[in-house]
Length: 91
Image (cartoon, rainbow, N blue to C red):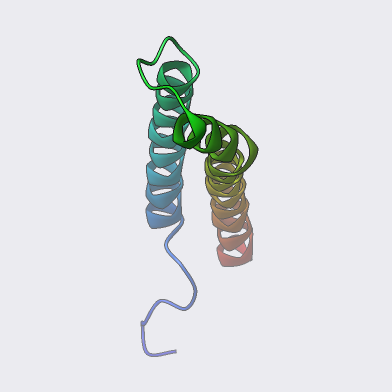
């Protein structure tokens, strides 16, 4: 071998995993805060208000939740890859 690293740096994978966790937390908090405001006592009435409320609760908020879950899943995958990289490097 010529001294070049083959594979990923476990430390960098763990750091990236932490970034994904933080992004998931921020997105989750934003979704919750927006949902509370949108479902709260808005001074907005009429068909557009009803349409937006329905769209938020049936489509937009669930889409954000799926993004949170994807970030969390990817974070776990990065941690798993870091562990596997260390196992491979140890042999």
